[in-house]
Each structure stands twice: as structure tokens, then as C-alpha cells.
Length: 217
Ligand SMILES: [Zn+2]
Image 1 (tube, protein in one colour):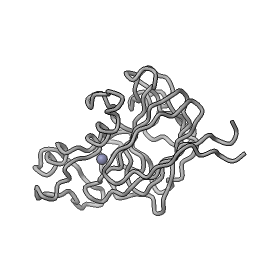
Image 2 (cartoon, helix red, strand yellow; image 1 turned 90 degrees about the vertical axis):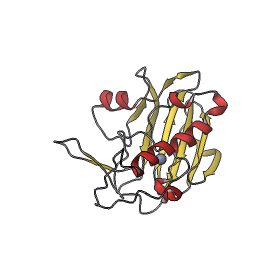
Image 3 (cartoon, helix red, strand yellow; image 1 turned 135 degrees about the vertical axis):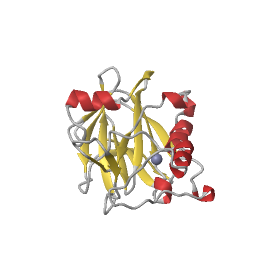
Image 4 (spheres, helix red, strand yellow; image 1 turned 60 degrees about the horizontal axis):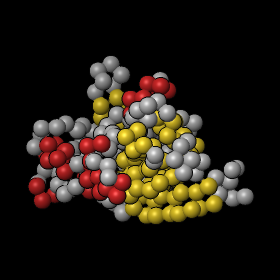
């Protein structure tokens, strides 16, 4: 039996999307630019994805196939069952971009350094995106009455960071999938999942999403 596709959608750049995913179902996230991804326990929306639990309980900063996204209550929300992003690693350090963050960076009040040594951040007010992942995710989960401040820091798919092991300095990079890559997650409980096609200061692209029943069920 092939995978049975239950639904698919294209999320335009700098917009968000959310959906329920039942235990045992899978979600595929496909793209070439950064995707900010969060998950909640569908039956208790206060139980949310937690970056720290995910890193600490698995004793690693980077996760890929076979690893899990854990909740604040130490329960697995999702397991990564496929990952074709071979050029880099996904990020578990950063939060999400927002209008406020763009303004702070443009004003020099928040930092963002690229390992490539360039500064692609817009400086002119008219070039600053009017919204980012924070606003996109806030809008996406609004039907579930989740307050924006209750959205956890995301799993940043296709966002490769370089971290200096001695100083802890974090650098953004331009490392992205050369061709469209995908990450497949299997839900370990009934979940609400939400994602944002990050604007990446104007460089972001649309994201394709598919929910399916895997063939071996
Ligand atoms: Zn973003």
C-alpha cells in the first residue's frame, strides 16, 4: 500500500498555516528556505514543543531522522522519520523573526551575524518586512485560541547555524537546500502543528506541506 495523502497545501512565502495531525499520521514539509515549525498536544494546547527538552533529553543540538520533538512535559510530540536536507542542519537555537525583530536589527539594537560576512538585513524602513514568523504563526493558530505569547520557540527547518564551540557565538548562514528538500514527521500523539514560511528578510520562498498515512500502518 502506498502512502495515502490526506491533504496538501502550498504555504505562500511569509505566511503561516496550521492543521491537526492525528497520532500515526505523517506530515511532510518541503522547501528551499527556512520554515519555523511548532507543535502542540491537540488535547491540551498548553503542552507545547520545547526546544530545551528536545535538546537536553537527546543530548544534542541538532536533530534529524530518528530524533523526536519533545514537549515541555517530556513527551514525544513527533518523530522525524525522513530528512533529505544534506547540505546543512536544522536549528534548535533561534526563536522566530517578527516585525519588532526586524526593526531592532535595522536599528542596530539586536544582532544578527552571517558567517559569510555579509549583512543582508534591510536598513531602510520601507524595505523592512511588515511581518514575520511571529505574526504568521500567531495568525495560523488563532482559530485554536492560542495567544501569540504562548507559541513556543520553533524548530527551524532548513536553517543552518554555525556555533563557535568555545565562545558560543552564533552565526547565521546562507546554507539552504540546493534542490527542494523535505522533512517527514510522524505524530506520536494527536497534534496541532503550525508553520511559517520565513520571509528571510525577503529571500524566503513558499513551502509545500503534505499530510499522509504512511504505508506501513
Ligand atoms: Zn522567520
